[in-house]
Image 1 (spheres, rainbow, N blue to C red):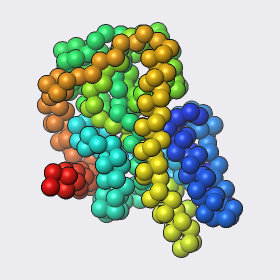
Image 2 (cartoon, rainbow, N blue to C red):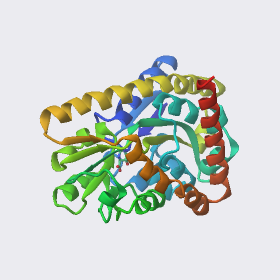
Image 3 (cartoon, rainbow, N blue to C red):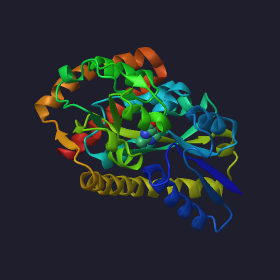
Image 4 (cartoon, rainbow, N blue to C red):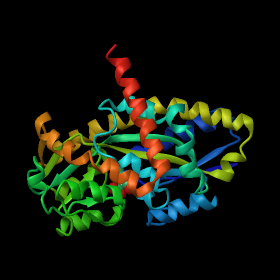
Length: 318
Ligand code: 6CS
C-alpha cells in the first residue's frame, strides 16, 4: 500500500528532510509493505487548503499543517503563540510529542472533529523576522506591512506589536517582497534561504519570539484502518523522528545561515533580553485572544501545554 505524504514546503526544506527520513524508516520497518510517496509544495496544488482538504477526504493520507491550518483546525493556532514554548527547541519537540499533550483529549478532539488525527509536531526552527529596516522595538515595527501566514492569531499578535500584518501565499511571497507589497517576512532561517527571500530583504532580526511548528496530521479513517502492527510501527517511527526531526532542523538552519551570510550582505541583528521583553509584554494578552477565538477546547490545550512546560522547567532546575 502507498501512504501519500503532503508537504507544505519544497525540496530542500525541513519538512522534506523529515519526510525523507520518515519514508526510509517506514519502508524499512514494513519490509516493503508500505511505500511512502512524498508530495512537496506545488505537486498537490498551490493553495494550502487544497492540501488540508485532500487529507480530510483521504486522497492524501498524511501531511503537515502549520500556520495556514488555522482555517481548518482553529485550535491548531496554539502553535503560533509567541513567547510560550521553552527556549530549548528539543525540549519543545519532546513536550509537543509527549502523550500528555499530543494524546490529550482536547488536542485529539480538535483534529478528530475535522476528520483528522494529530500524529506529532515538528518544530522547524526559530521564526526570524526580515525587513528593509532595523527592528529592535515595537516602535520600529509600527505600521510595518509584515507578511504572516493566514491565521487570525498571527494577525492579532503582530497587530499587538504595532505592525500592519498582511497575508500572501507562500509561492507569491518572493515577488511580493521584491516589489515592496510586503515590507517584512517571518520564516525559519532555512526557508529564508530555500525560497530566496533573503535576496530581497536587508535585515534579519532574531527575536526568538517563537518557533515555527508544523503539525503532522493524518486522515482519521486511514489512521483508524491501520492494523495493530502498523500502528505499532508508526508509533515507533514517530518516536524516533522527534530527535531526528530536531537534528534535521538544527543542521538545516545553521548551514543555511552560513549560505545566507556567504551570498549576501544582509545585516543580522540579535535582540537582547531587554528588547525581547518589550515584545513579550505585548504578546502576553494574545493568549486570551486565542481562548476567545477558539473556545474551551483550545483553552484546555493551552493549559495542558503550559503545565507540561512548567513541569519540564522545574525538572531542569532541580
Ligand atoms: O510561510 C509560509 O507560508 C510557509 N513557511 C514555511 C517555512 N513552511 C510552511 C508555511 O506555510
